[in-house]
Every structure is written in structure tokens, then in C-alpha cells.
Image (cartoon, rainbow, N blue to C red; front, top):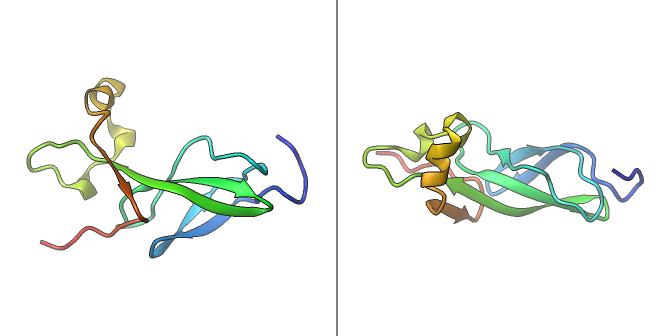
Length: 103
């Protein structure tokens, strides 16, 4: 990538009610893959960089519509590619990293 003062260094950016870690991003580019929201927060954030400022592009949650499967118990990184392909249309666009409601 390019070097220069317009690039965004690795760091944390506020996404809803929490900060999410992101990698270094070149000016005018987006992150290659989403960053997981921390702790009990749900979602994955994608970032862009403009003028040395990292901004959130979107926050999404891949959550298969399976009876009795809690969103907080599902992590797409542990699912097989076949499983993810079968549930590709079952995702949500979030306004930020979310904490699931209590029982």
C-alpha cells in the first residue's frame, strides 16, 4: 500500500457504544475484512479511511434463522463455508455494535 500522512494508523474507532479495533488502512481504501465487535457486543464492523480518519462503513451480523440459536452464541468464524453459503441471505445491517437484550 501507499505510505503517507493521509493513511489511517491501526487503532480503535467508536462503533455504537463501544470501540472496535481496526488495522492500518490506506487513504481512500476499505478494510479487507470486518473487525469483530468486542466482548458481549454483537456485530462486525467494516472501516474506510479518508484524510487520516478511519470511519465506520457498516456493521453487520450474520445470524442464521435457526430455532433456539442465540445470536450471542453464533460466531461465523467457526462455521463451515457450506453452512455459511446455505444461510448467506440471513444477515442484519446494524446501526452499531449491539448488546443483546436480556431474557
